[in-house]
Amino acid sequence: RAIRAFPPPADGHDGTTSTGAQVFQGRGRFVSPDTIEVDGKELKFRKAVIATGGRAAIPSNIDGLADAPYTTNAELFNLQALPPRMVILGAGVVALEMAQTFASFGSRVSVVQRSSYLFQSKGGDKEAAEVIQGALEEEGVNFLSEAKTTRVETVRDADENDPSSFPLMKVVVNKSDGIEVELECECLLVATGRVPNVENMGLEQANVDYDPKRGVLINDLAQSTSNPNVYAVGDCAAGVPRLTHMSGEMAKVIVQNALFDDEWKISSLVVPAVMYTHPECATVGISSEDAAERAGLEVDIYRAGLEHNDRAITEGERKGFVKIVTEKGSGKMLGATVVAGRAGELINEITLAMKHGIGLDGIGRNIHSYPTTGEAVMGCGLQFINSKWKRLD
Image (cartoon, rainbow, N blue to C red; front, side):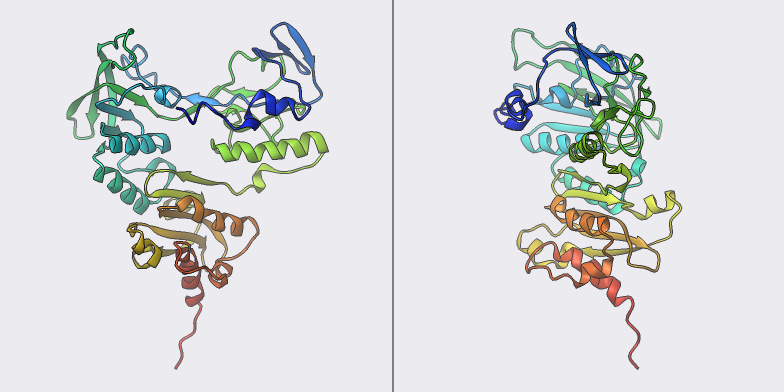
C-alpha cells in the first residue's frame, strides 16, 4: 500500500500540467458530438479520447452474491489483515496471481473454475496449465474444476469499528459429479472477468456507438466507428486485449493518428501477455495447438524444456519450457507460450521477431549469452534449423 500510494509523477496532475495541458477535475460527460461538460463547464473539442478503463464483472446468476461483502481487485489491497480463508471465483490472471500470493502469505485459498483445466476457455496451452496449477497446489491452493457457484450466504458481517475484522461467508458450489460443496471464507474474491466503463457519460449524445459488455466500438485507427473525432483507448475499447501495456501502445497510436494525421493501425500490433505467478506464464499470438485448431490453422510446435537449461538448473527453476508455434512447414512464427521464472522477459524477443517478420531460423542463429534462460528460445530455433537437415550417407 505504501508503494501504491505514490504513483509515478507522469500519472499525476502536476506531471500533466507540466507538459502544457490543462486538467479539469470533475465528472465529465459528452453533451454533443463535439462538446464535453465537466461540472457545468462546457469544453469544445476537435478530437477527444475516451480512457475510462474497466471494472470487475460481477456475475448476476449467483444467488446472494450481490448482497454479500465480496471483494474485487479494486478493493483487495485495502485489506488491513490477512484473511484466514479465501475463496476465488474465476481462474484467470487476477485469480491465479492473487491465489498464489495469499496462499504464500498463509491464507487457505480455494479457486472455483468452470473449465476442466486452466486457460481452457481461451485455448491456452495445456502443459502450461498443468505446470502453473501444480505450482499453486504446492503452495496450498485448492482447485475446484468443472464447478459452478450457485449461492453465497452471508453468515456474519464485519465489525465496522474494527478495520482488521472480517465477514464470514458460505459459498455453495456444484461440482460436475453432482456433489454440492460448501466453502466458508472470510474473503470472497470475484475475478470472473472485466467490463468496460461506458455508462453515464453521454456516449449517445456524442453519437459514439458502444456495447455495454465489450466497450466503445472502434476501427483499426482507434476511432469511434460512428464519430471519427472521438477515440477510445484501453479497457473501455471493444475488441482489444485488456492489458496495461496495450493501453499504453494504443495511446501512441491515438497521438499519432489524432494529432499528426498518421494511420497507425491496431491490427499491426503484436501484443504479449504475462501472468505474474511463480513461475510466470507469458504468451503471444497463436500460443498453443488448441488455439491454432480453433483458428483453423495447421502448425508445427517447437519446444525447449528448462530441465536441461544450466541457468534454470542453477536457480532451481527447472519446471518450465518455451513453445513456439509456426506456420506448418515454415519458420514463420505465429505465437508462443513461455513458462519460466522470468517468462515476461523471454517473450519480448519472440514478440519483436514476430513484429518484424524474423523467422524461427533467425532466432536460432542469434547468439544468446550463456548461461541464460533465454537459451531455451534459441533452442526452439535450433530445432527448426535441424528439422531441415538432410541425411548424410
